[in-house]
Length: 237
Image: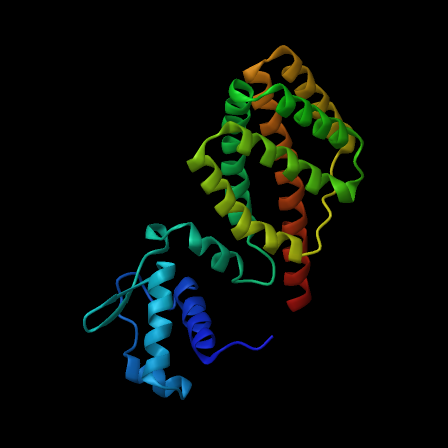
């Protein structure tokens, strides 16, 4: 799929900034210099700078644009960071999954406090499916459960944050073609325990169960990405 000249300039500058070619606080080359480099118009460069500003990795000010430290950016920069290499960075993925585990635990507690009988029944149905799902079905079933807890928690900010994490990371993971090599017996055991927690209305056990499921998926993702990156490094040697 072809991209516009503005998108091309934006993506190249974005990649250079995120790879550390420009230090935080450093001024980017002038519109004129960038236009000369890419053999394009200053209007195209101006629009590219605006997009970098919207992403949060540059601040357009009178007299030019300056680089913003990644740590000062918003969640929108996560996707571009994951795109820097052929495969998502395992360290970043692990951080996302650790945060997701904490959010999932909170969502499960809130869900059980607020859920209707219909929602409880639906959660039990998904948990039953998780106990019998094939490897290639596990990821989708797990995401359905997590989404059910998040929506049922009736917490707007929680939903916004999890939506952001999902939109930034999930397409990148799916693009790898990964089918998690999960311990199905362990997943089934955890899911069964969560069903019991729902029956007992046990907030702590339900919260702990969903966090354990996230840990299982996290371990599978990190192992896959680490091994794939290692194979790629050997291929370049």
